[in-house]
Image: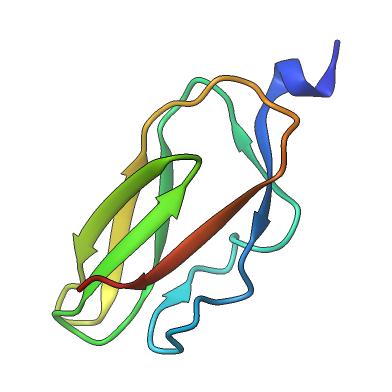
Length: 93
């Protein structure tokens, strides 16, 4: 079975966004793969109460960090693709 049929995307994750205050959780790294057809949670840390904007494959999601600085968004399900994409997270304006 083709890899593209098993996985959503091969994602090239930005090492961290230009904003050093927003950080991804440990699983988010270069060359990661997301499951196709399922919501994909993306999480990390920033300043407590800070707003975060996450962009991936045409989707833009926002979240507000809790009192400990943890934030989380869920990307909508995507079809299988072998095209590399970039996941970014930075402070929402």
